[in-house]
Image 1: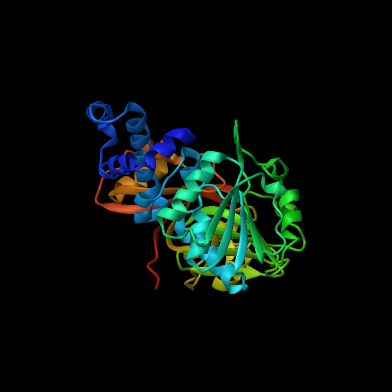
Image 2 (image 1 turned 90 degrees about the vertical axis):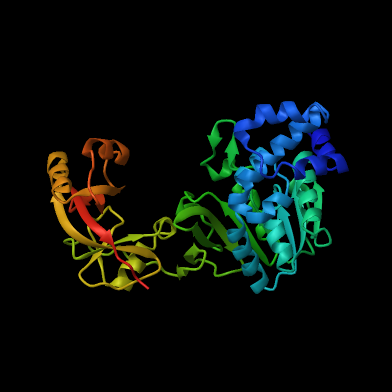
Length: 391
């Protein structure tokens, strides 16, 4: 879709056509396109069907708002999901931010959340189509008075007079994900320089950013949503030098100013704790181990074990029934004996592929189990257990 086709969508005819496609079935797109082209220009039909598909994809991140919003393929893929953007907007608001420059704003996911929190936003992107989409989103959601969209190179934007900046640099290129922070567009070093020009700033980075790349005057936060790590953020003007893991939608934040040393390793106890991915990325496994009075099952594996159950929101607890050396025949016989028809297979520190193992097990029966393929004291092992229902 180009800028002219998108502009066509914003006309009354385009709006009427797009509104009629909310519940259309993409599997019948060819027949639908043929029917619609009898009554509408082909260019408009193509743009409307493309936008209808993107809105259906966008629902996972934006809920019902997606059907009032507009997207580009890259935009719907890269936009911050609503719950994460709302959490960050509340953080800015708590820090007294009232005017913010959103640099590399994309389709406006973060700008929308900020505006809804009462923050006036300058949203900047260099792509004309992306800017047009962001502007249409602000207008469609009734936020145009709080969101100014500007098409420009973010490195040329003067941020003096703003309380804060938020920078979400491009982390994908023609060959896929970019892992070197200096290869982001704009680079991490530029973003850090921009952050230091205002009282408060947040820089969105890839979750795999090396800890040594975090500036000394920044706090680093890893964020997960329902167990899936979404992003890392470098905060300036908020807890410099800290490291934190935030679990959304509501599990809270684990943070420290001085990370604990790694806990010792020891034998597998009655309970196994699987830390959330954000906790692992933030290198806060030791903090969770301290909470539950636990130890590692292996010096190199982020599984915690303990003899007593101490619930924590930062890890999922399992009651372990079996600790065995790895062996396919033994596992297959044991699961058959126990009537296991459903196995959740997790791995950490194992080369075995869970789906391949599941096919070989040929499970049958009414019962279920969780199988951990991992190392215990350096040896390939299998742990069997069940999730613990905790308050």
